[in-house]
Image (cartoon, rainbow, N blue to C red; front, top):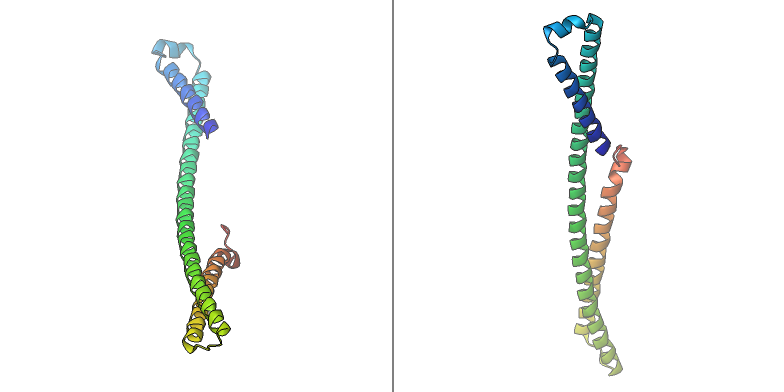
Length: 161
């Protein structure tokens, strides 16, 4: 990018020198110069103008590409933040269910040591286990969905994958 800017500055300076040289020529000076020399100067000026416009187009294209890339990266960062927030919520949910399951298992062990079979403890244990399975399944499903989103461009054969 610095090279392009440097080249653009050099070309602009050369164009200015050529332009001022042509402007400084008076009619008498033009009579002293031969027509071939004037034609060469004008041809050089046109070549420099063409090169300058091409460089300007390249700079604009590079800036556009940079803006597009930055926008894509910002979108990716937002997606990753959302994924992180969802994963954090899943982890908290799993921790909550595991605490519930540990408490219930502890109560079941105590009831079994005392020889008491409590149906409500068994039901609550099964509910906690079902909750754990649901949370685990939801977490697995979210992870699979994220993987599928990443694989989709590859499967479709997109060039930007």
